[in-house]
Image (cartoon, rainbow over all chains, first blue to last red; front, side, top):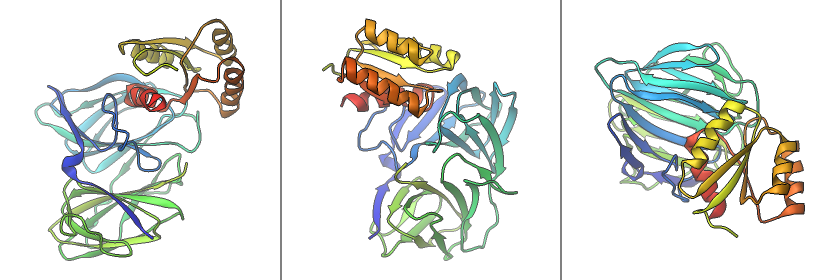
Amino acid sequence: MAQYIFHKSDSRHHEYNDWLDSKKTFSFADYYNPKRMNFGALRVFNDDILVAGKGFGNHPHDNMEIISIPLTGSLKHKDNLGNEKIISAGQSQIMSTGSGVFHSEYNNEPDGETRFLQIWIYPNELNTSPRYQEVALPTEKGRSHFEAFIAPQASETISAIQQNAWMSIGNFEKHQTFNYPVHLKGNGIYLYVITGAIEVDGHQLIEVDGHQLSDGDGLGITEIDHFSGKVNSENAQLLVIEVPMQF
Amino acid sequence: MNDESSLKILAVGYHEEIMKVLKRLINSHSGWTGTIALSILDAQQLLKNEPFDAILLCAGVSQAEEQTLVSTVNQLNAQIKIIRHYGGGSGLLENEIRAAFS
């Protein structure tokens, strides 16, 4: 039977300073909440806003798949693998940090904010060679399904990740229905509403906020082979993260 | 057993620059003292000579080496927590240590 865990937008840990406004779904840095540690292999989901020209200075990572998705503005990336890149809204950056990498990440906008999702997924193998990838986010509207942009195996429009995980985007119009078949038995689904209002139906309509999820809400679903739903607003954009629950 | 407010932590890993950062991050936490080992042999030697509350397994340490260290710890002091560190920086460090001692 399907199991659900609902993370309402305002239940996220919110902290800010003069350069960063961050909403954290799971425990991170000095925010520690034993009830909010992870969803399967999904360990970090931060919704961050960087002020103009500011960002994260050079720092290390290892053994983590780190995905950054600008929602507005652009990020300036530099790492010790020799990559100097700018990624903008509509793109995603994937760092498989493996045996270790140093990088910096700054808001590339001279005057405006950059909002981006920072997502960390545990790898299924340790100490692999670090690598950097970029991929365009799916933009096509009007389809009833989600388009993957990250998967275990790369293709022309998909970047590979070191885990049996998939990330997909759905761009939907009002009244559209959608369906997501789980790729791998036992995987869980973390659905995040980037923008819009939706209803979700796994095996039965879940009861959250009058059956509706909206901007910033997250919903974890396990023990399903698919989920479906309906869009109640114009221009809904949904992110689906499918991850192993045992890893 | 120690609680999380005062800890001696041995961080083991092969990426020297990352290990220096981790040591600095551990030591920046009030009550925590970090020591780094850049090989399993160094770690075993340190474990024999100094008391530690936790071992942090970092980049480059294989699962076979992890088992070697588990065996060493079981022989010396099974109360030492063995923690696999992911992420390489400050993001999960404090969480992982606090979770191990909670």
